[in-house]
Image 1 (cartoon, rainbow, N blue to C red):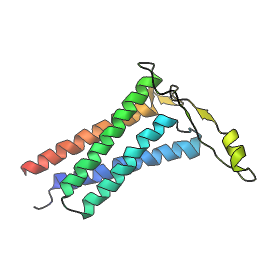
Image 2 (cartoon, one colour):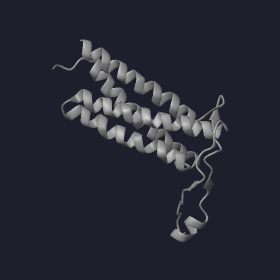
Image 3 (spheres, rainbow, N blue to C red):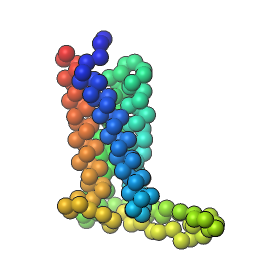
Length: 159
């Protein structure tokens, strides 16, 4: 089976979207001190998997399967983002645990880093744009990308 332009585009989206969303998450964390809560981490894990699956789709057969699995992982992250956004907007109740990110600085022991770590609540959006939180943006971007990938794969089957 030859590669179609739809499959190639789906591969690129399946790799680029989770990689860029993870890059944005780490830039916001380390560049702007927007530390992740527990549910933020939950959204990152499927993106890590999606990057690996998308890369496998470039090198292993059947390519369409690997890209579809990557799209599924992206969609899962988006759905977790929807759940997290709903918690932030008080649409429903979330988890009771919150994450703290220890950041050991120079001359600081690991214990000091843990004791002085910021407590990050899952039910408060630390940043919004036009009323949409980072979790909300993850939902919108990830879900849209996953649906686009599935659509491209479906189109490529017909070619």
